[in-house]
Length: 244
Image 1 (cartoon, rainbow, N blue to C red):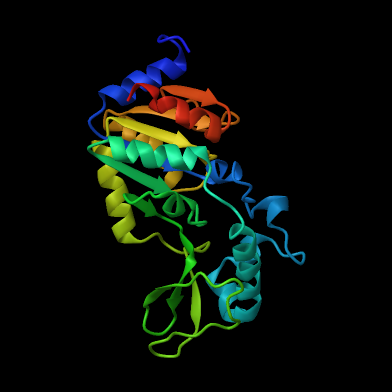
Image 2: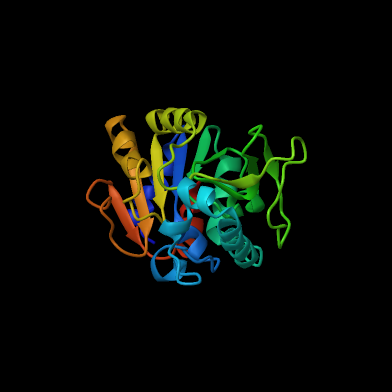
């Protein structure tokens, strides 16, 4: 790829950057075969994801919600990190100041070895006590229905940010710091329509960052970013490391 190409320009920006932030969405995990669990991919027993991933659905029928998450866990458990996940681990290793923000709950970034990250929508392998609030890691497949807290015996819920719930203030603070201080923001495999992540590219650009998008197709963010690269994350992200 020629140095003056879009890919070459992103490489140059990364090579010169003192601080790098990456934002990832469903597109990076799609290359590992993880379904989006939204739209047609999200249909389960004729329920939509939007009908099950809510506090109201869990209050109304926690068994149904846990059965759905159990089905998701069984699907995700068979998936492995792909070359894009691994490339971000290597980018973290090579960078003095790096932060990864992911909208994905599948845990594949952690499986790949990422350590400096915010899982802003939670992690499907964690469960939170509805009584004492303690978060437990649980990789059981299948998980028991209905799971209870080992400390207080209360019902556990998936440690996921559901529709209608707010993101963790700690995560938002970490994201804000990373976005406002990075020299380069990579936006990888995200549609750019779910807030607050949909506003992250604009926030980084307003703070002076160079922003590059990697996605199969144009998104609402494509008009905001400096460069948009179209293709699969697993193919393009590893290429970015060649000059760093």
